[in-house]
Image (cartoon, rainbow, N blue to C red; front, side):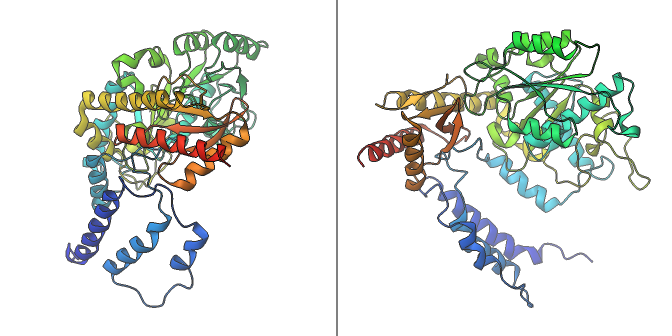
Length: 467
């Protein structure tokens, strides 16, 4: 007989209490952690105890000792990297996913999860204006979404070249020429490396990080100078520093004229396609062959959840799928979840996506993305009005890059902001300069948070100048 709910009750009650207190602390708490991993090691490490601890006590111990080392990423004052918060429906759905404990590989074994994820996938295609025949897979994040899409591209391009990569591997295969923009995200190179495709050809970008379509055309001509060859072009929806979008209509047109597979890395920027007034940023994007994004960025579902979308379902399933005698596969045309992702065993990541979309609707998603962009524009306006602050990018979406004169001053201002703890903004280097990079990604960020952020930057710059 199974144990039922009783053994879980006290531990779950404790977890609810700690989670509620953690969320309630976000508006006022320091954003950054107050202890480093090395300082926390003693609380969590040492010898494995011989005797166990009651489950509820474990939860209490975990919450108590972890808190000093937690970053307040759910806070509306967290502007680091590109990390969103979590919508209430998505968080609660994720708790159910843990309680249900479904290994979401097969439609036959977990029909409810399959139905939910297939619905979420179709909603995403509708929301983002992507081809309805596309397959959708839910992976860990944009890195694996890019990997999945590019694996499908590799399979299709080599098949067109008469090479069976499943049977013969890559040794001796026709070379796939990969072309990327100068300011693509590093996860594109990482995915190409994972796939054995080597370093890409880099195409110049403009001052905002957009690929130059004319230069791409020339680079494609050079790649095909010695005759037909498999071509893969990677474009970008949302530069991690400037938020800029590649010129999709022109870049995809020249790529298709050369017979290329076109992939779009849209980790956070793909969501702009859900907002009618931002349609100019993503115009033409739907003509690509694959798209990658993160649901835990602009959509605000819990970690982890990336989304891989591939127009060519056969290529995706051939690259990712596995068959074995003990796996009871569904013959339905929708395909098993395991045919669309690198993992066989995985949690039901698409369920929180479904919950987020169900709770918001298309209008709500558009409003959420619109508000992120509006908050970024307002913050950039307030910051540009401050003496000594340079806004280096065109703030068309959710990213802001700042400098404060020379690199040393920029580094000092960044360090003071992080030490102060009212907000979190990450340092970086862009266009040959040290920068303070701000990403507005959290659905809870409001006008007060924007004022706090602008005030924190002003205070840090004044303190640096006063030394």
